[in-house]
Image (tube, rainbow, N blue to C red; front, side):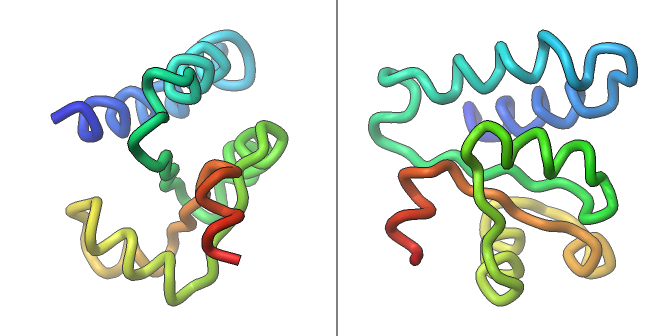
Length: 102
């Protein structure tokens, strides 16, 4: 339930044109990356590959893109999206998870 809520919140933040690069996404990242929130789980961010502003925002905050094979696996495991959306999406992982997957 909480992962779904966080994914939904991030998606809504991305859709807000005026605030998308300002306060809301940064607050969400601070909350998700807090020691109590992230101590026992990984943070995954899925977005469209063409949303360059979103990808660069998360990269500026330390998230890293995963490879295509891992991206497809993660999208199928944690999201309920059609195949076409899998093909046009990317997944970014928080720095702690990125170190493990390298």
